[in-house]
Image 1 (cartoon, helix red, strand yellow):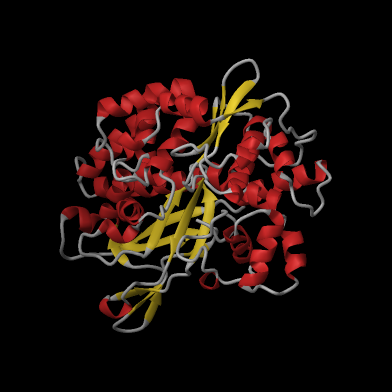
Image 2 (tube, rainbow, N blue to C red):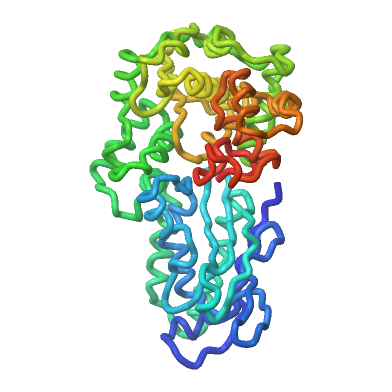
Length: 459
């Protein structure tokens, strides 16, 4: 996966405006993986340029203020209110200050970052019409960090060369540098951002209590719970506590023998998270499992799927025994644990259980970062996207699906294949979209929701 982001500002003169604007005015250009994302046309003379003439100062402020959310907040969420809150921290058009900013959205899944450019929303009403690519570039989160840091430092140098040494940008940049250098401040800001809050927006005491809960569930698991809670109106109070997880495990969960669950006999060749996209890692793990277990293109029975999780088939069939918020596996002690699933449908429970199997394999044998809690949530973090891709390929391997469809992508045929593999129709539709067999708008079960299983077309 390419890993290159550049944000440049070629100096130009400006006769009016604030001292900060005049000192940092120039032609803005942003590239990702060598693809120019800011290109546009001056509407009054049809001249094509690499980017707009804008001051770097407000953009640098926007980057610094939203740094934690850009770096750690997964998304975009599908729920309307959450998506609206999310947009202000991730869409460059919200920079404002009277300029027409690129229609570029920047966000992360916690491991990799995404830069998505689109055409101007109302091209007739602007002086500079962004051409956009309607293409999403995936890069390492570290490369985005480096590009933003370099851009902000360049803006600061221009300010200081014009005698501006005590601007608001100087202050917020210094604060951000302190937060990034202090481990405890980093933990606080990271969780705050994962919950969808701006700096200092969340209740401090409540957030610190959540951080202390991470000692029980695990630091990364806490982040996954936060990314799920962002879909609620009050994310901080909606987020699950360790005691909630334990109670759900005891009251609505099923016993699991951790020592009898599936393990890969040879995990070599499975790339570490980060250098490889989440969907690719999930598929690769599923291919490893199917090859090891001699599954070929066969359906995985409920009994066998439960065996892979170290539990009994009742975890799938007992649809009335449901977790309220998320599906999860919770390790307890002496090689024992509990598994609790959320769906009321057998197909949904099979998919959730497969996600948990993939999560455990990835955490214990690939990243070597296992914790007590293995959550399957609604978010689009790297971990959750990997889970969905794994589950889809394990339960309904696409080569077999494609062969059985034999070019017939009708809804009736899709339902037939879904019934055969005991998955939902949405699973089959998402696979067809993600492999280019269907257009998203021709997939009614997933249109408007984003591709559900985090393959190349997913968010």
